[in-house]
Length: 452
Image (cartoon, rainbow, N blue to C red; front, side, top):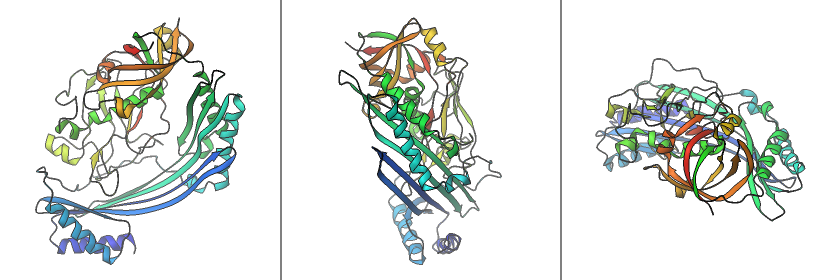
């Protein structure tokens, strides 16, 4: 059945059934991926998915239902499930469908050419990444993951208040994870990749070589004595740390007592040099969309302005509770789930100094290149963390050797107050369609490091 025909029949039935308001959310997706191992195709996938999520208000409560197909029989299924679901809702806060905005921004999130890349070209690109990495050094053992992927997603939202909007987005990415082994049988891994709209900008040889060089640089690592050290988080590790604590900026988390930032609007929560922006309008980025999953128009928000906390991220429900305008951050993580709060392209605004200049400014200290154990060693509510890390010892402003078997500990929000300088090397890479975090290098005054 045609989607528009299905929508019309569903809405007619919903009105006849007495639903107070209702909304249809449709998502269509296609994806391709090829993974190479030792010059052969290790995995090859081509998938298409489709589904609809329907929500409707019954007796003041919003019920949800979803289906992976659309036909006449599904209409009764959705209506019955919405009624049953609404009957067991215990949340006292009212949920509603959004009437829409007068205008929606034009965003760059789709490239028609990306859908026309020959399969053989994507396979050859993955092969080239592996080949380039293996040629860098005899210590390169293998590539546990070496893949080229692309996907397309189409979202369509319509509701009983007249909202009817849709968009399409697509991506192409190449990723190389390289494993190396030193003379002392020490094994290290690192990765590099491209993620964007333009296949011609994917340089497979450059990706493979850079991933290999990053891994090789970690060989010969050993711990440092325990103590407090000045630290520079490389942009990769800084981005991972930022992503881990995005949830603290959710208004819903604050309402439920799971954010340390509750009640701190307009307070100083970071250093003067720290500005954090949530920008769903950035051209070509992973989380660039014209509207969120509720149909709220996308807009750029300065979340932290020169260290001052300016806004939480809101969906329509939390915005109504706080008496503010929705920020366009209500997103569905899956068809089965209700709308939740997520960031879009969420990043630390870059400064003027290069990574190398930050090393010179620090003089002696540690560069944190990789952090491990974020799921178990990081408390999203308090900000406390204790994480295994790999990096480099810096003396006289120069990297002298690799460092491993160390644990960094502290509090993320305390650390953000201790940022001395922000690098200029911001780069989004290998992101997510929400909570797409990025940060340049961050020079932090000091951090506790447990070593030998």
